[in-house]
Image 1: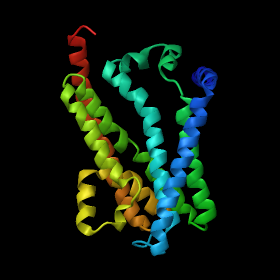
Image 2 (image 1 turned 180 degrees about the horizontal axis):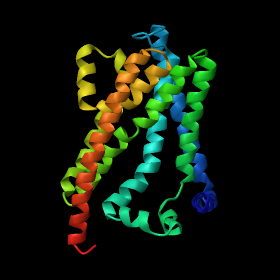
Image 3 (image 1 turned 90 degrees about the horizontal axis):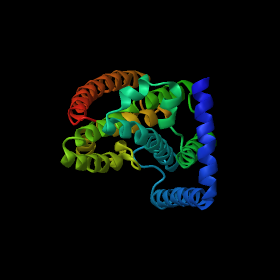
Image 4 (image 1 turned 60 degrees about the vertical axis):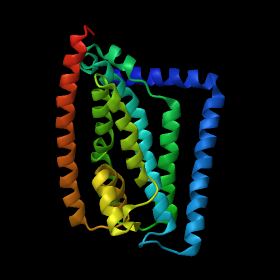
Length: 261
């Protein structure tokens, strides 16, 4: 309880600080809403020509986009804190210090949470209003797949940022990886031709496992059996990436300590 009490106080302090520059919050919300409207208008034009594309209607496309946006908001909020500690090589020290010091480094940003809230509300509205009568089991299993596959998005960034601590040139890999990954943000791979589907899945399997599979499960476009198979693949990929990260991080700490940090 003490952790959450301190965290809440720091969050309220961040709210007060941000509110002093309230135009930032208002502007961020306005930009996000305009972005949503633009995406809806974009899909609206496309689906005027055809009611469905590869079995996906407009609202299912938008749900996919909303789920990908939730993931991006979570990655931005958690990733900035986690990756900063990795680059500094202090994560272990933070975890072993008194909890008040640990919370000092862990601050909730109100603007990030506003984005997360708006993305989540878009997904909920689409699911309840425009895509009703979805099987509850599919929805719950899809949400579970989304949560458990989130490390597939964040860990590669953490690995590259850790490598970048002593090999600065590899930092460009972050932009390359993000560029490939966000090709999945608006369009489900199911609508691609087989060649491009295989190509994008091979280049960025995280986008397939973290965005497409949970959304397809929620919408009932894949069977529970296939979902269970993907669950095994997700867990295996999580463990593999975690193992790679720990090896890289351990080497990073030794490099950091070698410079007297």
